[in-house]
Length: 278
Image 1 (spheres, rainbow, N blue to C red):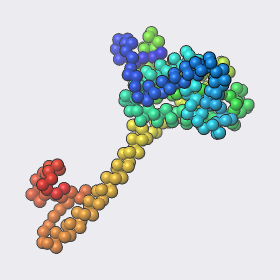
Image 2 (image 1 turned 90 degrees about the vertical axis):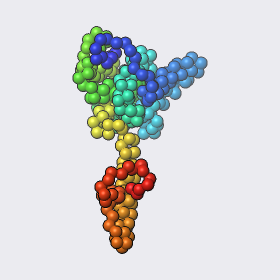
Image 3 (image 1 turned 60 degrees about the horizontal axis):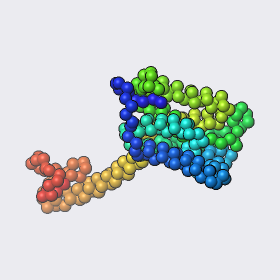
């Protein structure tokens, strides 16, 4: 596992909170819930197949596009993937906010799942190992997409690689991705490998093209911007009408381009002072 390092080696754990915590807890709770229930109800683990991603069924079971990261079949795989999400996800969430992290998770997992399913159909049985009936799941596709996002923002940040070597984040991201792909391909899990690539691609596109603080923040800013523009337009119309009225009274008044009253004496007014009009 890689840890951030700006100096001596530190084992301080990052904050465990926000969207990062909810993603990890959901994956852990689902894993142990299926494990415990399977001891008493042997048919329960079979239900997990309905929540894994399967191209031939995904268009019917749309929830698979959201649930497949939380279905993990191996404890050690879940452990290392969760640690990767924790260390790199918590850092990005602190820097960019919880909205960004939630949107990144949805963009990479849903977008990557849709793209993988779409590609699986033309590649079905034409490319060895690609089959529309193959199942894929686990937190690794998202964790690797998250690692690439971290490398995009902190490409030259040196990290302690497995507590031994200090390597730049961009190289660690490449190493992790290549090792995972090599493991999946060597074990004949080609669809899993393709799912990791599509998750990484969709996550990368989100990082490059989405607003820095997320789509929700940008949408709110746009709404407030439109509201403010409407208020300023109303204020300008009211100022114009007031100017015409005062001209009829033999007085000249002036307003700025936003419709705010300009003091003829040039005095700067306190906008919080209710004794004068603004």
